[in-house]
Image (tube, rainbow, N blue to C red):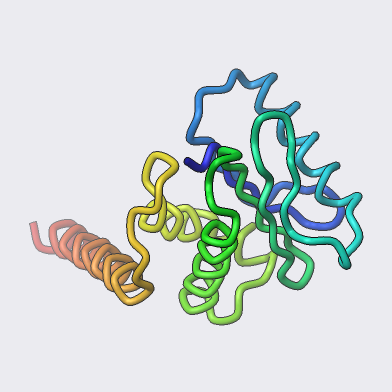
Length: 156
């Protein structure tokens, strides 16, 4: 099970975070800080897995962003690493070459992709095509609702 997901830059600014286990706000801040310190202090030559408390930190760096999933120590690290890769690929398709500014200014879409990808800390959908189809359907529905609202306002 994935306990939480973080995305942060090299300056320790969190750009995306989602917790699937129950933590108090103080515990969330402490866990986030500890995980960021663990990841940022590692050399790029080391592997992408770190034991932390009773969990395993699995991370991948893409440009200036670190994508981190904290999982049970019994979970397969390579599957988690592949999940991170797939999540970033879908973000790349949705945003057209993902960058930190996309996560800052369009964080709703990033969370939408994450919610289509993971559900309660488990992989919900592994197919990139299905995730993109669901996102396109949601955006199409949102646009049609906006058009209907505008039409209602103008033609009452």
